[in-house]
Image 1 (tube, rainbow, N blue to C red):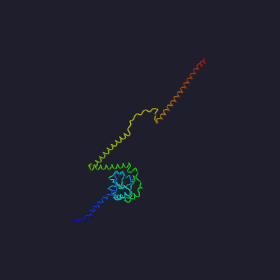
Image 2: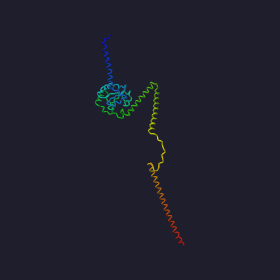
Image 3: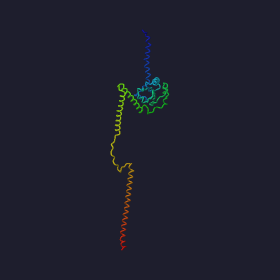
Image 4: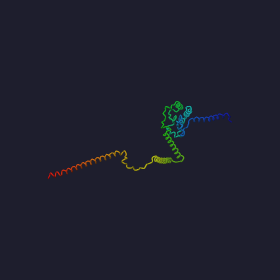
Length: 278
């Protein structure tokens, strides 16, 4: 039979292990988890955010330093957070994550990419000495809250949804790979036709088509500006024709007068010539 004192040591060790487990989890709780639902919390206050993936070796090496830095968050008045890009593809597209791990600093909605050494001391100095002021913030066009980055986030979420559906078709439903591709091709074709019909309907509502009516013959009183030079030419031709007709009428009147005067002379000269002959 074992003495009672020999059981004290294993029990004490077990109690220490049980007490140490929640303490370890309490340290990890200093790092906040950011998702697509609560990412707008980053727009207020000061934050340091790490984008990582569980399979990334560099991210795994950074975790102890990041956890230790998070313990200083309350003293430095900075929120320390992390984002798992495998679980949150929308945030990966919203922040344009092209390398892992990627660290961002955020101060009242202005985002700056941290590219310094990745140790706890360097993180603390970056916040306490305000070294982030020497880094140019991300442009508002490429900020996570812009329309462009929101569209990019939706595109990344759509790609992840397509990948999930593809795996479901192959693994759960047992479809061949070409069958899954055929389903997506058919869905793309139908969605394109539906979108085209919607665009035509909207365009017809906003800009209804008008039936062409025969245009009335333009009157002389109301002529467009483009026909004014032609009208002037026609008026000048009519004036020239009137002048020519007046000249012709004048010449005819002169000829008639001359003819009448000659006739009168001949009549007066006729009797005198007869007396002379006699």
